[in-house]
Image (cartoon, one colour):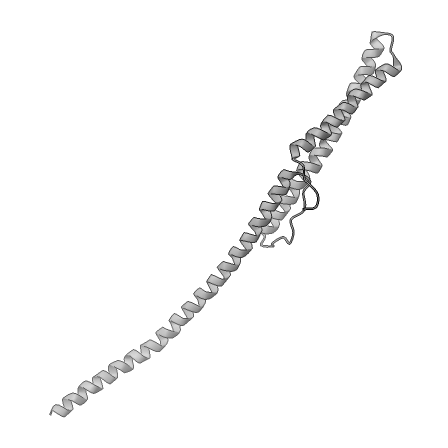
Length: 165
């Protein structure tokens, strides 16, 4: 388990809080540095800063969601597709967040249990096949022996009747 995983919520909140703080500092510094005298220039500058901050916030948020949520979901989906096609994945990737890490561990355990169950089913099918073969062989041997036993009994009865005469 090398690196400690943080909860997804904490990771997202930390990164977004960092971005928000940076945006507030940027707006404050810009307002202080330019020291606009009239209201119209100040409102225009604040609107531009608000728009640029919103764009940065959205782009960074999309990046975070993609890296911390969508990529792990895509990886797990690929693993599920492999498993559904009958190919057992050798290794489950390591995930950054605690929640996806636990989900990956559960997926790995489920895969191991499925491999064990499949091995057990194959073993059971082989034993069932051997049982059917043994029953067929026993049937093929029992029929002629049964007929011979009947003939022997008839012969013995006939022999006993012959002696009585």
